[in-house]
Length: 75
Image 1 (cartoon, rainbow, N blue to C red):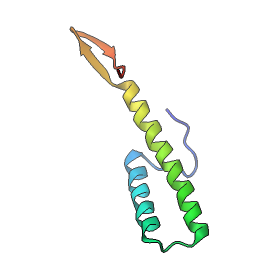
Image 2: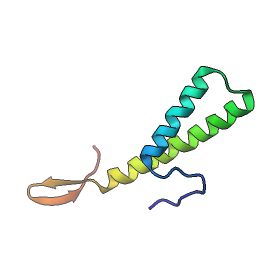
Image 3: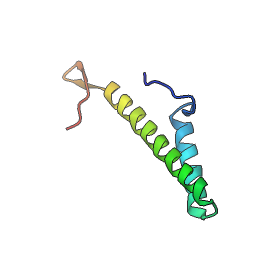
């Protein structure tokens, strides 16, 4: 498992939801510059969290090859 930071989302779905909310706020253009910068950094952290989670799941996917369960490797 990945180490969990104190401000890490509860799970992948929570991270995606928070990222979507940040994007809506940023696109609205209502955030002051300081909050915009903070939202951007948080978004980058959430994106990395999501990518790491997806990579972990990808590594765990197994495929059946001629009756033998093998680790999946992307081509």
